[in-house]
Length: 326
Image 1 (cartoon, one colour):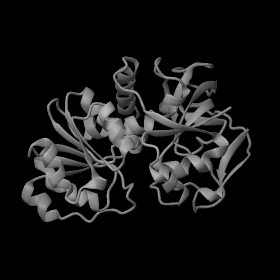
Image 2 (cartoon, one colour):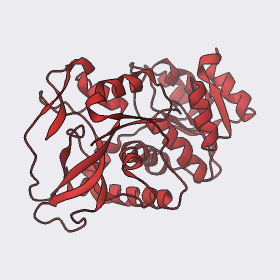
Image 3 (cartoon, rainbow, N blue to C red):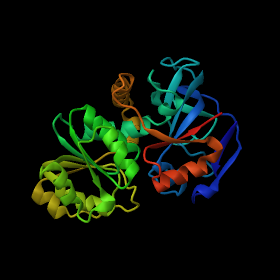
């Protein structure tokens, strides 16, 4: 088979479209013929050697795939050959075939094609884990979502809205604003057009403070957004797309009695697969009902993975970028 191989840690220029040995499923694993693969900001961190998980080079990047079951290993009974599925892997997704642990393979919602299936697990799994498990979301909560045009942010906007929350989306582009309004955000703050982020949020909320802030951005934005949290509010620390890990003022955390809550969906998937299956089943039900759907705004053939990754780095277009196979 062929795959995009990263020969050394560095960047997208170190990716090569090349022939590699076909993988074979072992006990408790599933071989998937990949039809599409999601492109995530975390892929860029993985290529640079800056992600929490660091494989040995050379390796094939790619976390989320969608395709059909080609073969199953011993002990696998929940999926059958030919079934359309979605899968999560720590590496190997940018390939024509990939072996996925059976605990990380899920039936594809009936409303999804291969492309939508490849844009679902990482974004919606992270956003769902953030809002439902770690954030203790309730209907009527005010939720502020940073990075609302990205994978996790756009999913968090949708999930917050369908759960009965009032969602304010923070984005830095026209495309991000259109996407947030399409997904039902009650208000949008254009980060690229304001000097004081907290003041801009209050202008949209009428002075109401947030119960939850979903933060996949990090950097200076995290410090500024602390000002909008209500007493008992939760800052959900999802990621650091801005490139910097923020230094937060713990005196404000203490005096305002707000919570800093870490969110790492990949750890949930690894350590608590039964809990993760329940989460993905709930999200898949919402998808099958038509309540949520990933906004795939750009697709590239797999050999053009470099171009796809650069599009994600630029944040252009808003929404999800997916690689197609075949």
